[in-house]
Length: 160
Image (tube, rainbow, N blue to C red; front, side, top):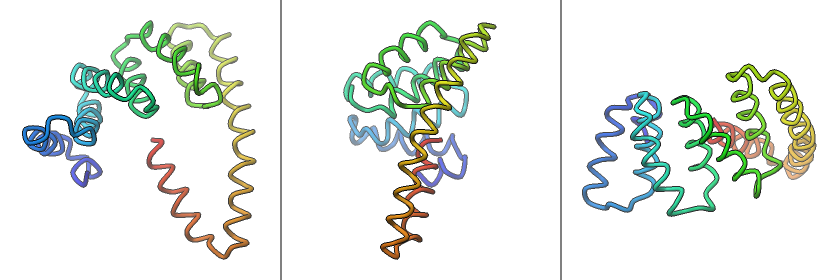
């Protein structure tokens, strides 16, 4: 993880591969390898690994969101659209899906869909912001604002 966070993607992949030699089904190592491969523009490896993880853990939204990113950057827009439709079935209120839908529409010069998708993402974010504001008030009332800040910083890192 440290090598990945320091953007030493070759080293991160090497470490993940060594771990996977010992324990083939270690999902964290596979996910790390997929993300490092993504950042090295090795979309083939990233895609295959993320597809495998997604089949193994169909409930894991993060695997599929990374697969969506991979499809988009490898210009597999049909697959990206299909994955968005699938993910919206269980996560219809996740702004990231609308955002990726907007990016796909923009790349296809479909500016009406681009605008509508961005508008939907904005509406979801507005609704979600109320929840975070309420959480912030609760944490501050409990005297745990520092802990809340660490939590939100960690959440921001995980969503990137």
